[in-house]
Image (tube, rainbow, N blue to C red; front, side):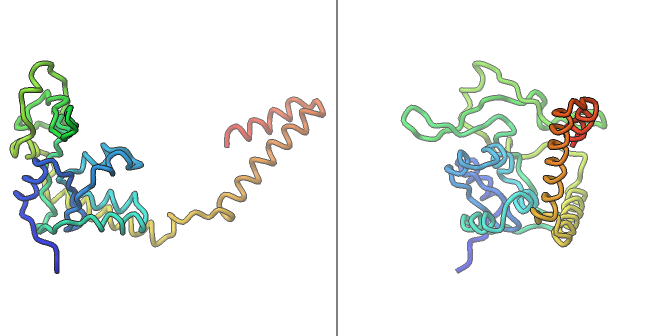
Length: 226
């Protein structure tokens, strides 16, 4: 039996309920809370892709074994449009994080708020990112992010252009794979480098022992600049 197909609104409601959801191709991945603390890249690397298509980043930085484990947390599918998934603004990007209260229950907590409103029109010179500031006394009164705060602000990059960038990246990534550049050549690649380093050090020590200080310094300098 296949996974259910969720609408964009269903994904949003589950994010607002506290689930950590990312899009991998057309799959919805629910990230377990344990991943956030155990992820080698840190929790922010995941939180900044909540509600967004993380396919390119996940494929680039994870092994085949890790990808198989990630796909095991698929909970649903979504329909991807012509120009890709229409992303949400991750809650962490507007200052919202999940924290446990005194009873251990996870609740939304706002650590900061945006300096510039998300709805502000962009100009050619305006910054495209949001600046987060902590405003004491104002943050605790808000219960959590809303559907409005999940909507990304205006961007100078259209969905079509972003999709073209993604396709170009995937083509380049495949060329790197086909060229074998991800395969480490320990003997043929690192071997000659290690031999060269050792040679420079041995020559530097040898000439130093013979009191040929300038010659020793020359080889020591070659080693230092490798």
